[in-house]
Amino acid sequence: MSKKTIAAILLFFLCAADTTIIPLQTRRSTSLTTPNGVFDLDQAVVHSVATRNKHRRNLLNWRKNTGLGGPFSQSSKITAPALIPGKILERRQIEPLSDVANNSLWPGIISVGTPAQQFVVDFDTGSSDLWVLSSDCQSDICSVPGRSRYNVLASSTAEKQDNQTFSINYAVSGPVYKDTVCVAGVTVTGQSFGAATTLSVDFSDIPLDGILGLAFPALNSFNETPVFNLAYEQHKVKANQFGLFLAGNGSELFLGGVDSSKFKGEVEFHDVFNAGSLGFWALNNTEAKVAGEEVVSDIVAVVDSGTNVVYGPPADVATLYEKVPGADLFMVEEGSSLYSFPCESVPSIAFSWGGKDWAIPTTTMSQGLTEEGSSQCIGAVVGLDTGLGDNVWVLGDPWMRGLYSVFDFDKEAMGFATLK
Image (cartoon, rainbow, N blue to C red; front, side, top):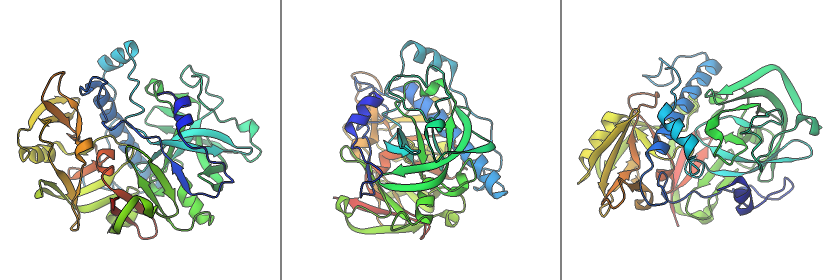
């Protein structure tokens, strides 16, 4: 799907609008599935590499910003960045993976500068940076028709940050600016952000102009205040929390509160691990369950809307699938352990913090057939060493689609509610 199509689907919100809701373009109901219903291994590997690199950069930012060691017990050693295997890059050059963007992003529209320059960005709870493409990026990837690029000379409120640059995952880099930013009617001034002058080939099929991170400030690449936190400091939102509704239709980000029309009952809150000082939206004392039975405990769970599967340490994921009737190890590819299960018997896999069991919906548990005509489906729970620690899981959008999520900076807590 092209950026132009996404922009046409999304509702357009001017900065003067009286709203704190931004609609998000919805992905397909299955994350890594080709049009013929078969699991796309290449996309899965690309996404695994991107996830490891993303959280590697998060750990580096955290260490730089806090001066402390690894935030999780096993993360004091930060490994070198992972690379997408050459065989996959070769195949992508022949047949681009055009569904990559639809399967790992939740885009919406923001504006930067005075007068406003509009951009389609991904909203990501697993990072804390804002960056958009720069008009100084002249590569073919940046020049794709329909992409928007930030022109500093066209903004009367722009301020270049001298001698400050950014680099994220060796894929995006450029100078740092401060300017006015508007998201869903919420306008902040003096917002730090990156203007990307270089962009890797991995973005060639992604119809985006940038990313807006919603995690804690400790993960920020510029050691500056992220967009939502600055909005609260400048009294532009009523509450220091935001809500996320990710679904087949009507997905939205609600700034400064929650949209009670999307859920029923009370919100079940839990304290963020180490009071949010780590930067991640993470919860400890997590249990993973199969059909209501606890199979893995003492988990630290990072909730990350920028991840299109649920990742767990390979040993834990193997233990989990041992409890799933008919499950088999499909393959181990580039460090990712992939499992299959009978398509007609979708397992109930849930996570709990001592309250309700919050399950992965049956509609998002399958990532496609193992092969055309097969009765086995690839599971949305994948074994992967993300580099965050031996007991750390990353709960991505297959799980988040089963509930309404609330992220509260004042309480330093996350909340979950039952969808209507």
